Each structure stands twice: as C-alpha cells, then as structure tokens.
Image 1 (cartoon, rainbow, N blue to C red):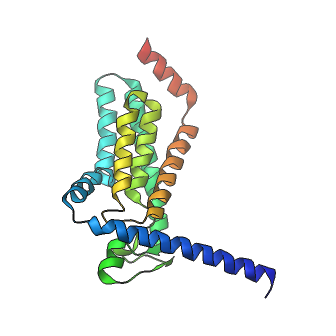
Image 2: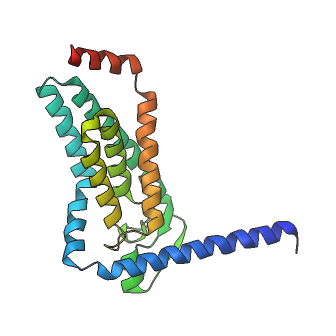
Image 3: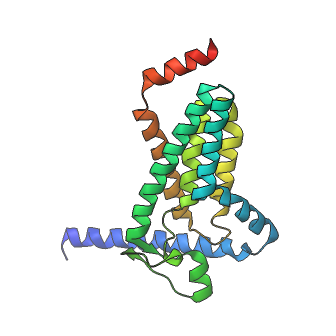
Length: 206
C-alpha cells in the first residue's frame, strides 16, 4: 500500500470518527426534544428564521429612520445584508449537500450525509440556517451598536444552542452555521463604505 493510500485511509477514518461522535452527541441531546423547556426555546428560536429575522432587521431600519438615528438605521441595513448573504450561501450548500436531520435519523432510523441535490427539509441539516442568520445579525449589531452586544449575542447563543437538543441539527451543523454567520457579518463590514459610515456617525453625534 502506498503512503498516499495510507494517508487517505487515515483521513477517512478520522472523518468517520468525527461524524459518528457528532451523530451520537446529537442523538443523546435530542432525547429531550419533547421537554417543555426545549420546545419553548425551540419555538423562540424561530425568531431567526428567514422571514422573522428579515422583519426584525427592517424594524431596526425603520426605527432608526423615524427616530433620526442614522447609526441605528445603518446597523439595520448591515444586519439585513449580512442576513441575506449568510442565507444565500446557506441555501446553496443545503441545495447541494444532503444530510439527514437528527430527528429523522432517530425516528426513521435512516441517515445519509453526502453531496447531492436535497429532496426536502428532512435532508437539509447542514449547515444550520437559524444559527447562521442569528450570528450574522447579532455580530453586526454588537459591532455597530455596542450597547446591544450582550442581549444580541445572548439571543444568538440561545438560537444556536437549542438546535441540537430540539433534534434539528448536529453540533457540526451549528458550528458551520456560526462560522458562516461570522464570515457574512465581517464581509459586509469589510465592503461597507467607511467614509459614508463615519459621516453618518458624526452627523448623529453633532
């Protein structure tokens, strides 16, 4: 056996081990998916679904405009952009990579994790879209409106953390969603016109 073949085999073994641990953690956590606390927090985490999160971003934009607070309106716009970016990338991944949700693995005793066109919500576990959106929006909010950092990040942590116990995602799905959300937030910050942002901030403080 060549060295390359041995390396490939070791890499495959490592990936398989990580995947099995990921599945086992999800299976263990999801035993509590029907607990009232988990169900309540799970329902609350729907605030990070596409439409509710878009509505929140729009409300922040509107509040900033009505109150004549440019920094707030700007933060809302950036939150919306980060949310849209993370959601778009998430959708591309989900459409082209199938992974059975933990609840499906547990209740139907079926599991798949492979590249390929997804067939519906049951096989779109990777990555966690709720986590991506929540982290993207909270990161922008914490950066642009520091006084909101603690509650914004706490909500994002709740949304992310409850996805495994409620049987919707594996830990790796959540980690990938968090990384995607962070990347989207920092991408929007990187391309946002700095002079435009500074002038708005000065006008609010004047």
